[in-house]
Image (tube, rainbow, N blue to C red; front, side, top):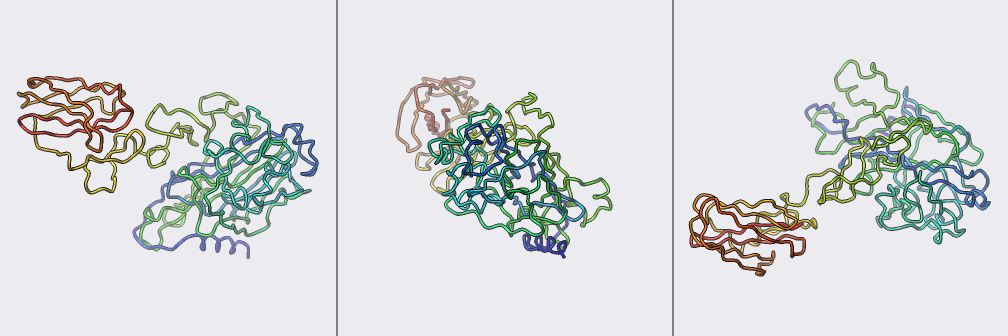
Length: 460
């Protein structure tokens, strides 16, 4: 009966569509991220309000499912013939005061009590009944759980293993809308209850959000659990991921979700056809904390881990972080990690009275007001580099044989500076100096007796 129940859960979480068969693209699931979240110190362990069991040096791990934009996490768990496991060589810490086995069950106003914030639990996005969980590197609104924000002055340790201290960023994110209630089927783990076992294995237990769930930020990462233990922490998990609607084909046999299976064998994909081609493996589905971890910079035990900050070398991106593949990518102007909407690239500002819209260095989509004029002449003109950090060179091509006036304007058409170049011929150059101006988008009007044209120049 429970096998049928999990199948029913998948059916409720997906929609049946019709069309031509297309093999799903497994790259939509980028992997599981294990975030070093906190290390308990002596004061945390000595506090009795949260109950016994917390050991100084215990590490808190958070686990996220990382997906490309448009994909949704449907279920996590153990599937028939593909068991899941969660375990520790000692015990998981369970806060006996106000802790819960599910993150969504923790009232937000209890997060600042004793050691509730580092309790162990499973979840589907939620870190409380009012907060989503996000990587600390994505949390820009400070902390509500550590130090002066904690009723007992706890959760202050700044151990290097955990990266950013919880007194600075706690990975709690509020969208103004509480995370949805999750559903689960099968025998829930007891290892997150006081006195529970230290390991859990099951091939017929799953937790889910009906219809699937995306992460609360553009990076699309869904928190699936928080685990606190002073022992060796390990897991093997299976997931189903919903394919974006515009990627689902129109045949009754087409897949609208993908299964990622931790213990999948080669024979599980044999035979071809509709029934098996949505099953995939991924190297991040199993984890053991005792394994030597080489970070994204090649350092054993280093802190440059997926989800942590880095520098992609592109001044036009923000929030640069390592992906699960250890690529350092930043967010583009639309908030998409690794996206192509970068300063200087085309966009649509929604204004019919502008043309040649591009993203500015401050990620404003702006075009040239048509009222400024964009006439056919004069001559062919090149401008490089554009964007520029200060100097750019105009190069005049065929047809240049007359005196030319250069006028620098704001996007509103206000004149800033005018220069008369004298007579120009093909191959002539003229240097534009923007080093004394603030970063932004400017307009350069080039006028001669042959006509005029307006070019956009971006100062980074």
